[in-house]
Length: 233
Figure 1 (cartoon, one colour):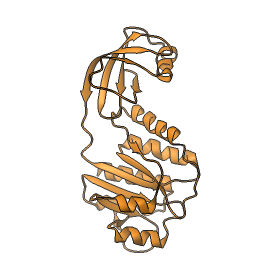
Figure 2 (cartoon, helix red, strand yellow):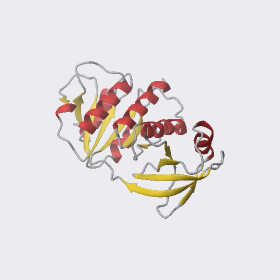
Figure 3 (tube, one colour):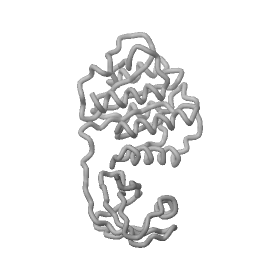
Figure 4 (cartoon, helix red, strand yellow):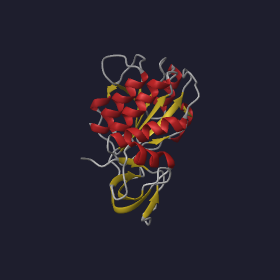
C-alpha cells in the first residue's frame, strides 16, 4: 500500500527532523490516526521525495525524522500555459487541477481585453495545484503566477516555442503536429476569445497560431487539451 503523501512548503537537505504544520499534523494524527513509528512521504514540490517516520504524534505539531531523500529532475519539457482567468472560479479551478495532474511546469493567469475580471484567490488556487500534485504522486509543483496582463507576458517571453490558440479565421497549424520543444508556451484566451489586435500582436512577437481540434472549446477545456498535447506529444 502506498504511504500517505504530504506537501511541505520549505525543505533544507541538511534537515533530519521536521515539524509539520498544524493542518498537516491534524490530518496525519487525527484523520489518518497515524502513530509514532509509522512512515509517510513528503515533498517540497521541487523534486525532493522524503521518506519520514513519525517521532512525535502531536495533533498540532507532529514531528518526523527523515529516513531517506530522493531527488527527481524536472521533466525534459517545460510547458507554460498562459490562460485567461474566467468568471466561473470552479471551472478555472478544474483547469488548474487537471493541468497539474498532466505535469505542466508553469501557469500564468492572463488578463486580456475580454477577460471578465474577478478577484483571483491565489492561496486557494495554489492549494488546488498542491492537492493535484499529491494526488497524482508527483514531486514537482507547477509554478502558479499571479495574474498578468497579456502585453506583459508577450514582452517577457524568451526563446521558447510560442503558440496562440484562437477562434478567428486564418491559417492555423494543428498543435498536435508541432515538433516537441524543450520549452514552450501557449496562450489561451477568454470565453470571448482574444481580440484581433491581441492576436496580431502575439503573431508579430513570434507566436504561431494553432488549432486544438475541430470543435470550439471552453477556455478551461482548451487549456487542458493544450497541456496534454504539449506535455505528451
